[in-house]
Length: 361
Image 1 (cartoon, rainbow, N blue to C red):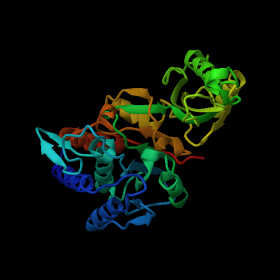
Image 2: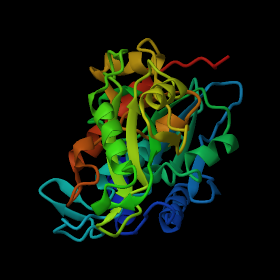
Image 3: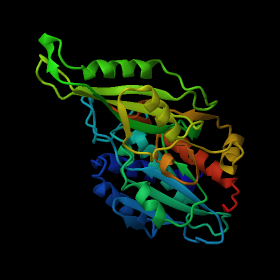
Image 4: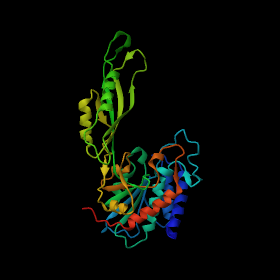
């Protein structure tokens, strides 16, 4: 790392500590958006903002060139009860930086910002750069990257910063949440009356547990269905429930579209099912894409990610890649190694230095 990028690294750590100290739960990210804007403005970067989304373009933006998006999110989940450290203290200890959002996705957020600043003043880039720090990723909210995309210049491809240990997540499962309702008839439990909706739901849940979709992805594996919530409206022990609600979390590979999955489930269940949303679709980027080829030349491996990110909401090809480890996300006493950020910045720059893009047609 040369002197200029070393300065970027130290600035990144300082910024990340400030961000950790500011609560930024999803839909409550205004203060971290302010912090990011102020930081960019101290670097003489003209920023733009919509709601809690902050973005900027490189100094010599040229509409005749293709454009690469550098994106990560600055919202966090709420800290869980197992924390032993102050989640907002930004504690540095033995090469680790502890704090809520340090790993997911603060490390990626500040590393990509450092990369953007590295290239910001350069005149001879063969592509443009857009940096976007976005909101509501943790809840797949509609006021995050989804609402921002129409305001950005035309994007040809992107890097989505999430903790992947700087390996290349080239595919991502789609997320389909289904609300299911089993319907029966009420009755008194002592008189063998009614039609128990809970029993119907249990039979349907057993089918969900045992069914296997036929098409298996080389990158993402099989479609995975999990029942995560079940409840009836009853509070009395002696009433046969007339309805039973349960929730199905479905992780869909790229071999199926959502409609096909929903139809298969509905045909095999007594319960009715309704999707909450059809937005978070599976995605993939070809292994011969210039971003992936550049990563391969830097010794990066590739894999299919079981988790969902804002990558699912982008209508162009994206690579999910960033410092940190996904296993630490949402954990108690979340942390990132400082060296992961230093190496992340260097690797991002090494990849982009050799990247040649063509405009999408």
